[in-house]
Image 1 (cartoon, rainbow, N blue to C red):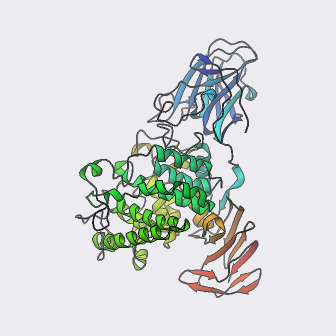
Image 2 (image 1 turned 180 degrees about the vertical axis):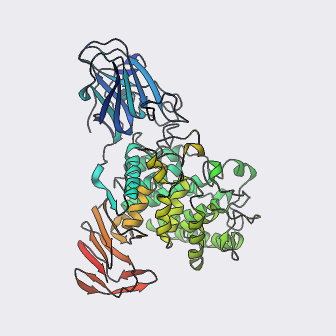
Image 3 (image 1 turned 90 degrees about the horizontal axis):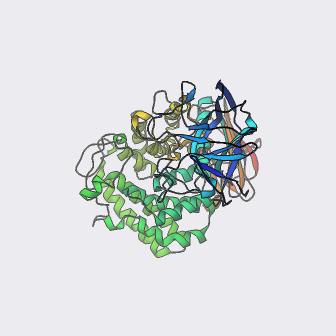
Amino acid sequence: MRKWYLSAVVFGAMLIPATGQDAASIHLVEQAPVAIVKIAPGLFLVDFGRVAFGNLALTSANSTPSVTVRFGEALKNGRVDTHPPGSVRYAEVKVTPKQGETVIVAPPADARNTMAPAVLSPAPWGVLTPFRWVEVEGWPTELRANQIRRRAAFDSTWVDDAATFHSSDPTLDKVWDLCHYSIKATTFAGVFVDGDRERLAYEADAYLTQLSYYAGDADPRIARATFDRLMKFPTWPSEWAPQMVFMAYADWMQTGDTAWLAAHYEGLKTKLLDERVGHDGLVISTPKQIRRGDVVDWPAHERDGYVFTSVNTVVNAFHLRALEEMSQLAEALSKTKEAAKYSEQERTAQATFQETLFDPVRGLYRDGAGTDHASLHANLFPLAFGLVPAGERPKLAQWLAGRGMAGSVYAAQYLLQGLFENGEATDALALITAPGDRSWRHMVDSGATITWEAWDQKYKPNQDWNHAWGAAPANLLPRFVLGAQPLTPGWGRALIQPHPGTLTSAEGRMPTPRGELSVAWKRDKNFTLTLSLPPGMTARVELPALVGSTEVRVGGAPVKAHREGQSWTLEKDLSGTVTIEER
């Protein structure tokens, strides 16, 4: 890892010596501007192309009187927006460069995100802020690219082209690129944080970011550092605690590492909401927990009119999913009695869950015991968590698809997952690229280079423009459009199951602990898929069944496959590089 030894760091007008300390797994990368525009004599607008967390290295050929440097995430009328909305960042600093000296120009510290309990960057680096544009005012000569560099903080293990995605839909490709870069750009803190406003780790943010991070980098260290921090500093929402079990389960499926799991297993037991479980196995919410604890979605007006009761359907859905995963984790550690206990607890609670909360007439889940209101959220989470009876899933998935994006960017992760897994890929893709202001297309069209905390400023006026929990397509598109997921811990066996929707082609690659995995498929009169697996990995392959198709060939030769519903499943796993064709 590269060390930085800097002569001085500028905080406002104050110089502080630098010591060269690094953040674990994070490094600073010098970036040249993509454009410099002279607005007026001595006034320059510098564009770095995309937002990143960092500060500046500024070198003057001459001793210069006071120079004003403005950092901005937003642009307005061709200038850095000095009064941006909400938590969108702007900062101004005055410096006095000396001839031949490189000064590190950093914004003033923000007490809210540069002091504990915020996740702190190494002091020698100077304050980091998210910015794309810089104005330099008072510069005596032409400002050249070699005189100004952004020092951007990124995960040192991230390789930009380790993951790729291209499809027949250019808008979808732009969405993936936005979301993929968002994960890289928000690794600046060395743990997954919620954005720049607070720079705190939250369990929900961390789990969603973990899923997308693994689609771009197979290294588990940042996810594990985040997990460790959250065990020490847990947050308050009811549904956030079970997502620690989700994080541990995702780590196990990604790495297959039971040693790490064993070291954290006992702590996971405190994340199951057991202290709130009633005699019937369901989680009970007190009035206080209803007021501040049961989140459902965030911000509050994204809850689709959710009616809160003492038995909350969403909270219980998280509890049931955590129990199911905890049983698998216990089994992986040969804790057979505990695995059986969690499994039985889940079965008992799920029976009550269905009896109490599912309305068989409408085929929908109520928001909770004692209300007939059936929100988007009371149904999307049970579907995503596999709690819906198999025969009811198609109808419920169609109902969710018809409701549209009636939840936040956080809930969208689970909504879209449920749609992809239950035959609604066309609608899932349509929601990602929908017109209007509640889709990733809107972020792309608005010029975002990191995903937002909410769909639009009007839905959360204080939102961050650098929130990784808004980057769900970074994991959803590789998992469901390319169709690559681990079937066994550590990717020894993968599932390749593309969900094309209306797409006619898609290709891409993703890193795994065993090496690069690539998928390319094309649909015309036949469906053809080329798959390349790293050594030590096999894959079960399921292809979308075309109308009239009668056989599957591998390398031109017919193979045994059975057709069930809307898919063909090959009877034998594949390995290496192969081409599969459905006819």
